[in-house]
Image 1 (tube, one colour):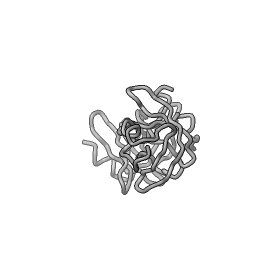
Image 2 (cartoon, one colour):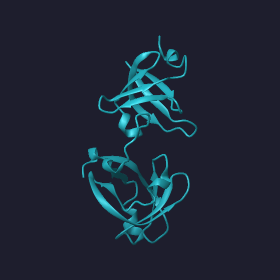
Image 3 (tube, one colour):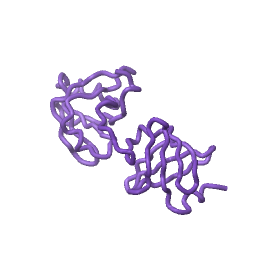
Length: 175
């Protein structure tokens, strides 16, 4: 499995108890959707290595307690600390034309209904109150809050994102 065939799931943040369990921070919108997970990949020195899951308990604020097969001691679990977790892209459900996964729209051209081409998505910033689209317009950073009704269409094949930004928002960033 290659990293370009996967998406970032989260990070092994700390130990959970003394019997090999770890706390995995899931960097996803809905952690509960991952409860049936039977395996994931950890980046071990640049190589994605499969780890099979024996136990998976939701905690709070995006954390889950995970017990991996063959990791039965605190020492073994310590070797997994700060390792990044990934899942294959092929396990993601296909979305409709007005939804997207944060990782997939990086590099997409953005077109506003009123202003036309406004730049390229450089990041999706996960803010507690409201996530933001970070868009680069010739070196100028544009931040657009993501809300219901913002996304008009996602053209995956063309790598284009069509939005309807709040009136006047884009003008704040233009000279």
